[in-house]
Image (cartoon, rainbow, N blue to C red):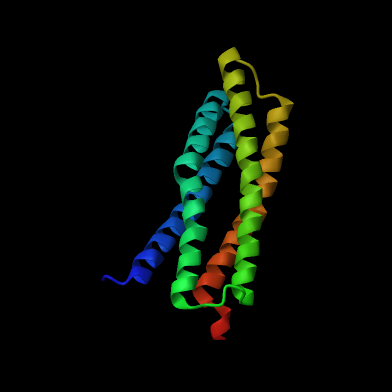
Length: 158
């Protein structure tokens, strides 16, 4: 078990699981809480979602390309193979969407906390941010699903 490739692959798979699982889990929790409309719950959920993004999603999002590039090198793949280039592009799409989503989550957290502290309803700005957050989640999610398929099926073997 001293093969560095296997250890790097294990870290890569683990970080992919954390990245995808945290993203899907926090998205479900955030949207389900939003639909219930409880301002206090939304404020608490937004705090936790931002924290989870820093603790899990950010770390896994950095580990993914690092371990991926190491595996490409160790396995002797051409880093410009079409399936790998497609993976880079899809990962970039997911990352760009995620960066905007994180920005929106900070805004929604601020607005929800303020509304909860003042006993107010959520302002229109919160709802506009939530709509954009929901829309941006889809290309990020679909991109990562396709990345998983490319990683497992490695089309160069077809």
